Length: 174
View 1 (cartoon, rainbow, N blue to C red):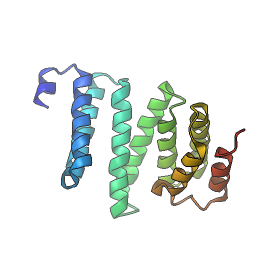
View 2 (view 1 turned 120 degrees about the vertical axis):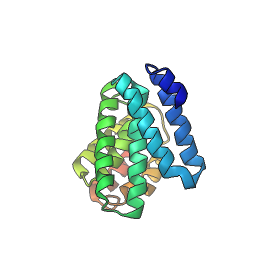
View 3 (view 1 turned 30 degrees about the vertical axis):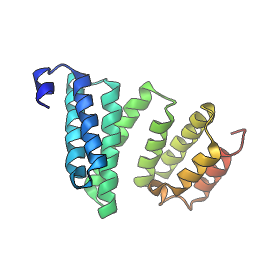
């Protein structure tokens, strides 16, 4: 952090710091919450320098989603988690305006919408994610299986529209 503060106009330095902080969160469970919060602060510092810095946008979106998921594990109606999901959705929306076919961004937007019980939007983002995955030549059977098992979709997994999307994803002409 000290190095980043000495070079206050270097977005990439703040992103590198955030990535290191996220790595600590992933490898040291006892520090996960603190490290994720620190990473958010670093991404936000990069965005203050340059609001359209794509690595900062997607990094902050991923990070806010991770923090929200952790809060929902403890309390599935946590209002702070809802606010974080909304922020993550706003960041992913910005990211997708630059990268319309980013399958991970589209998938994560579907996750956010599912967690917020916004089923119509969830469906729309899943359709776009499916198309992006198919265009990339992904194994759609594997994609459908992992999507069906993803805890972010536990609130919609039994919905008919969701099951139909999983079936359609595995058909060659979607």
